[in-house]
Length: 252
Image (tube, rainbow, N blue to C red; front, side, top):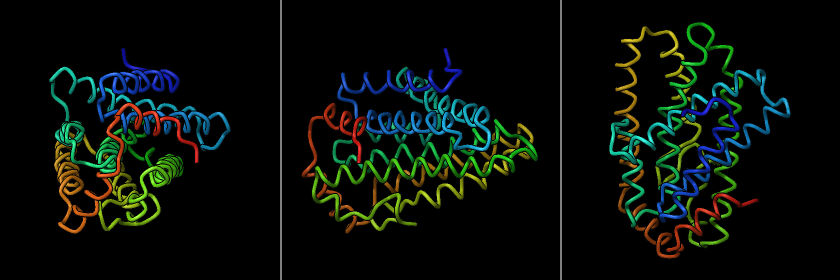
């Protein structure tokens, strides 16, 4: 049954975190980060940090449902978007760093799912009233990614050679920017909100192709970036469950 409240979303994501710990599945890295993000949004709603708390909860639930649906479809060998399939496949790649596998999930969830969720919750002209809270949820994501990366730097010294994903407009190593992803997601949300259903489906397929292409760059960066990432990977824990717990519980 799909979650209907933000509390149910946290429980559903935590189920994935626990499953990934038990099965040493690297998809748990993103799941642990996403659970913390959802909890932070819930705290923000309770504290009145958003302009419209009930609408933000609805956005968070619709946003999460896309990730949860993709996860369950992938686990059951069913159909999910190409970009989510690529991100989950990437979790099987033992040569990737923890940061690469985190960013694969972040790329898909922001660049694809967030725009679709926003247009679903605020269709038509109503999309513009959502912009402030849309930016706030991205600030939460940015803050948590920065915290997790800082924590990983303390555990794996070579991580300090990588520019902060959240703190820069573009990283030299992963060629990924949270700021650029947020701008693209908002532009697509406005487009989708003002399209007819058939137009939306065509545009979503085009978005999926673009996000898939970005994912390929995250996995296959240039030669210099690849060498740097290999140096980081050489210092990382082989204990996947321990790394999931680290991301799930880190406080910086």
